[in-house]
Amino acid sequence: MAGVIDRLSILCFAGTYALALVAELSRFVMRSTARWYTAFGLTVLGWVVQTLFLANYAFKRASAAPVSTAFESMMLLSWIVALIGLYWMIRSPRALAVGLFVLPLVLGLVVIAGWFAPRESDWTQWGGTIAFWGTVHGVFLLLGAVFTSVAFFVGLMYLVQARRLKAKKPSRTEIGLPSLEQSERIHRAAITIAFPLLTFGLLIGIVLSFLGTADIEATPVHVIRLTDPKVLSALLMWLVFASLLHARFRPAMRGRNMMVLTIVAFGFMVFAWVGVEALRLRTAHGKVVNTEGTTRP
Image (tube, rainbow, N blue to C red; front, top):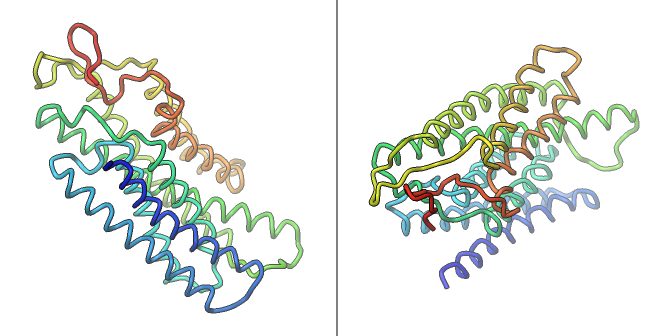
């Protein structure tokens, strides 16, 4: 019953974000100040409702870390990205189509979290020190994902603006976009911050994964191999981000190539979080395995 109520609550603010996106899309057919206020107001309403949902969820799970599951992490990620979008909408000229790029990302993250992301994890049952570092692991990855998301939607803006300039034709629609220089500057900063955060998060996760005995009954141990799908997807994600950082110093890789690579990196990040579970691939990540080799549910 609780799961049904949670999904109805998620559907409530997801629907509000969807209506805000519809208001943003209306810029293709109408020019009106009311359209901006409508889109902004609906985005604020969706964010407030999501804030209440997260506060209630955190209150019910007061004993658990706020980033202990993929569901919680992705919900927090969508909430932070929506807040960044609201801030940018306020600070930027109203003609700038921020919501047109931010809202689909927020809506997609909410849908993936609500209907595909796993809601349980065993590492919260570990001893105090391991549970603490598990939380640090989750926070680093969450912050890295925030800056990756910023690089993602800025990269999309760059690609659309580059295509528009290459066509050398006046746009039929009033879609304001940052200049290529502005997009590159924001993208460069976001990737530079995201890479060390993701690196430290993954390193902590690797150390935790290969620890010996955890401090819970029956002397269980946490066993995870390098061939685990979760580990492989995370390593591939890291390699793509390392390539992004390296591409900054190669003129041939700048511009469009970097933005496309960012979209690929974002896809790997989402897959590493929820793709393994969604495809029902067998993974020992987040599970406790006892000394007899059986996995605890």
